[in-house]
Image (tube, rainbow, N blue to C red; front, side, top):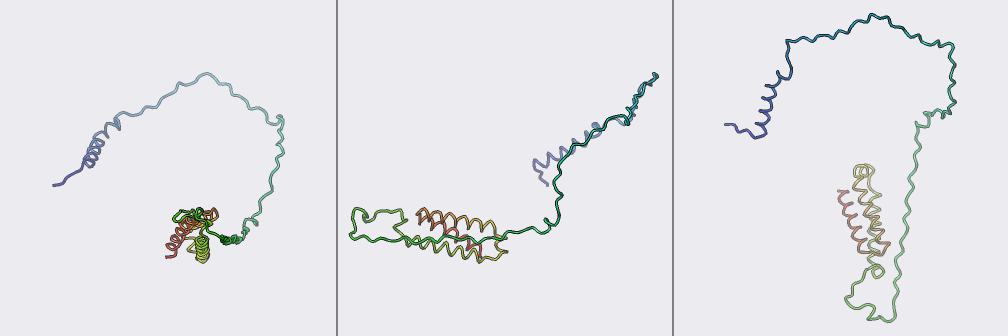
Length: 190
C-alpha cells in the first residue's frame, strides 16, 4: 500500500489536467491558413529622384583634440610601492608620585577607582601583551596571512581598540580587548 502526500496528488492532478487540455489549446488542424491578398494597384506611381550629390556643399569636420595614444610599455611593468614599516610610538610608563602623608579622606579603604593612573602595573601588562601580539602577527607566514585575512583583520581591530582604550586611561577595557585579540590569534595559529 502506497501513501501519497498532498503535494504529490496535486502534481499528478496538474499533469492529468494539462494533458487533457493540450488538444484544446493547440487548435484545429483541418483549417488551412489563407494568405491575405492585397488589391492590385493600377495607377502609375511617380518615383522621387534623389538629389544630385555632386552639387551639395561639404561640411567640414570639427577639430577635436585627441589624447595621446597609450603605450603598452607602461602597463607591462606596474610600479609597486614598498610598504613602509609602521613605527609605533613608545608609551612611557606613568610616573608614580609618593605622598608624605596618606590622607584617609582621599583614599578610603574599599573605595572603587577607575584604574588608569592608579594602576601603572596593569597598563604595563597590557602594553606588553600588545607588543607580544604584534610580534606574533609579524611572524606569521605569508600563506597564513593570505588564507586567514578576515581573522587577522579582527585581531588587528581588537589590538587597535585596545591601544585606544589604553591611551584613554581604561586599563581594564584595554586588557579585555587585548585578551580577545590574543585568543583569536591563538585560534589562528592552531
